Length: 492
Image 1 (cartoon, rainbow, N blue to C red):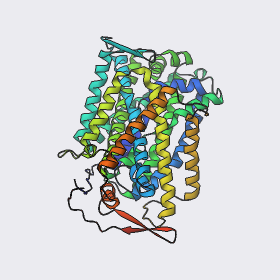
Image 2 (image 1 turned 30 degrees about the vertical axis):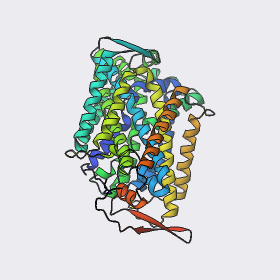
Image 3 (image 1 turned 135 degrees about the vertical axis):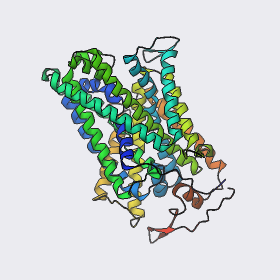
Image 4 (image 1 turned 90 degrees about the vertical axis):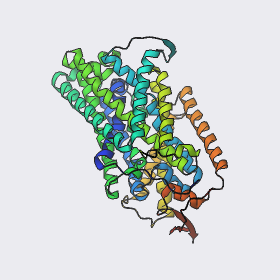
């Protein structure tokens, strides 16, 4: 077993990175949930919830913006947490990130089958079971499974192929979104937008889902090891992607409310598609909307599978998870086994159906909160312990940003806890607890299996020989010192 850092191919341009982040964020959720958001909080209330959510996420995004170009290694929160706080915080950060990504990706399969059925009805053949009030049929599951396999293969073939796929699909959903907005303004009416505001409980219900809707900008640090982008440009891309997604969600809520009355938005099979068909006066336009929706599903699915595989690879490459997940494909230079594992989980979820949508969104949102908290803590710890660390981008008013970002994480965590306004349901808690028990069992196995790996060797595996570090404490401060480590192959 080698102490060498395995490197992934640097193939992402600025456009690729922006498309990956934006496409992953906007996804499919707004197609299904915009009508529900408006019903819960009112049009203005839902838009305000996204303004608040975006501002809160920007504070967290600023910590990512400083850390990503400073530690441009695959793994994002894993490498940030390891450098700032050590072994087990890095494991927790990695498991939370993987759960957040795979939790959202898990409902892309059922969503894809639902979208395809809207355009080309799928025969209900081979009844399997009922979950959340929805019957699951083998024919529907098969459609979703085929898509899952294709997405997995695209990711195995290479990061550049995944980026090209992402860019094309993102362009498709933007075109349909512009068409939907134009139709809502031209053919809709202000009489459809009532109620404008409902209640604080409705506002809280929308705000509860905001973390899951914004998760995606953090694929940027996951892809840092594959970026061919100047380091100083990364923070701009990151913050721009958050702002672009926020504007998108607010415009789509506005367009949904303008296009059709509440009864159409709430009673239809796919709310936004039904609203678009109502506004244009022809069901064909609903099918056109679904074509864009399918693009959104594919961008989100592709982005989360990509990000989930990278974070598992980072942990396994550093022997913090079983090493087989750290294998790189000899031809395509992708983390093949980690991608396959994520693909298997995604494919299995195709059997759970539409009824599991809300479970996945809420449970994965809690994973997002943990992920954000670990990155924010890393930002604060590194500012204290390594004040002289090279930072291509340095956040102004770091103490204020750190405090506000911690406050954001605590606020979102409170919302999901039993004493909060919108606590997770028991089945959602079972997803969260089950994932972390499974992940920690693998981490404890790896800790025992690779117990002879030294801190210096693990630094090479995470950061590369040129970036590997050791910390020496002097007068209660931490100074950075380059490690002069051998990188030759040797048995651990």
